[in-house]
Length: 360
Ligand SMILES: Cc1ncc(COP(=O)(O)O)c(C=O)c1O
Image (cartoon, rainbow, N blue to C red):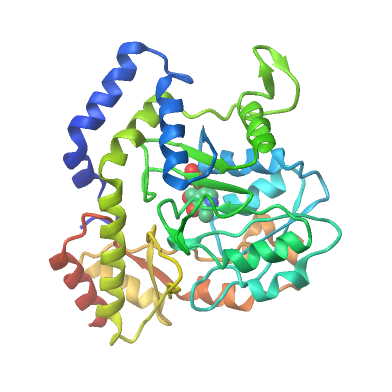
């Protein structure tokens, strides 16, 4: 059993993926070839955001967004400590300080009721994470941000395809950043990512930052990065869009099915609010005796993963900046969360087997 089965997906999409890759090999425009713009147009139409930029990875997307917003050394960016390191890492990389706001117990997303208390005169942006595939309470978060005139970057690395009140993740705030890491809900076959915004000036700045700050060929008008996405990777994502709507429906069905099947098990599940959807980048449960559960499932041939085993303020690279600070919900989740196999091709019999093992 695979934790995430990319082989079945490839078998279903072999022809369009191979044809799309072959086309790039034939025209030879590996960097900024026509697939880049084609993908950007498709994704901007999909999300409703005016601009989309394909970039080298989800990490690079966050970095470019922070650079475009002018986050400077000493600035604070509010985010959650219960996320993949890249979220906070890019803030630190440009000299900023991640200010952590604890998460909600049931959704594991930023607890917006604690947000305003974390805002200081040094706050430059707010960066919620749509963890496990579900957006946070973005209306409330955007309202607080607007009161303080702060931009919002949605770290939507795990949530491409999810919806919040009928609007698509990545188009819920000033900037949305996603990842096409192979195991993500929409993945390529290497590294890739995308940035979304409807702000023309920010889009222009981010396009320049993506190519070493160039406003024209060899006109370096700002400091940038090498942040382009390869045409071959764009080709893979374009091919995968063929059945992406079906995959999103499958993920939602499989996730709700897990919820229903586990309702009577002695484990807790992650809540999905009624006004939004999750694309379940991970299907995650909470279990007090996690190590024991991991081992027992492994014995039965069921792979699991922990997203994430430590709250970021407990990680060695970050701990020194957070001495004496605690984020109790995040710390508890880090002790209890366990992700079960989840992908669009997970069949019912396999899901039953997983659930029976968890219950046992
Ligand atoms: C929440 C979050 N942010 C950022 C990233 C970084 O994305 P990438 O791996 O494409 O750089 C990831 C990917 O794992 C993620 O899960």
